[in-house]
Length: 236
Image (tube, rainbow, N blue to C red; front, side, top):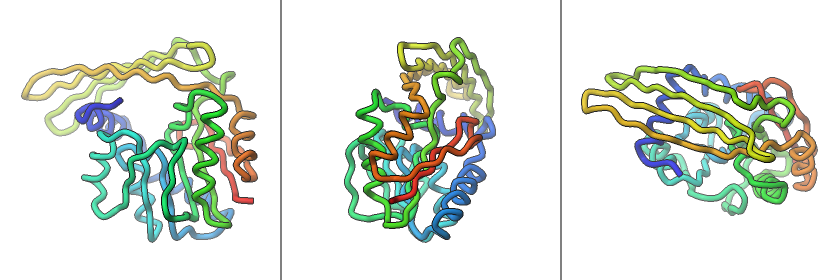
């Protein structure tokens, strides 16, 4: 679970590394438009600090977000005043509205532990679609594409704050274990954080089965924001 400061450091680190949330959101919206026309409403699941949601808000008349972490949600609320943001679990949430598009970015779906949880999450998302709505999910790596022992590292500067981020990924049964170390240096001193994630390595067929079980026709689009592709479902 994120602490309040780690949530802020997480956001600053990815922005400083050059993650283009605006371009990623534009690409997702293009996929939605190709399948149902201009969306008037959008729900972003696992919205985190609201980086993608901010970009979606510039293109849709009405947007909302759902996030499990209270610390992430606090950052998002500060950045997106007036946008309805809900704390909830993607596996079992119920909102009043229905949306032309539902999105789940940054491979957050990989935090589902098994097929049952994956099915439940996709079903919950699909339930919130309008009759011609589109569901877009960015998956984690497929098992055959995962690289055990992969190491990544970056240093970014945000104002007077310098953030170093080093990660190491290993195989843990049918999942990946990603250990991330942050060191933050600023005039007040130096602090370190460790963030560990266990992210399931679902195969393509597992995702497609979840969409089908939720009543959606599904396509897999190669590429995507991080090279892991995108699953695009349309309400049947």
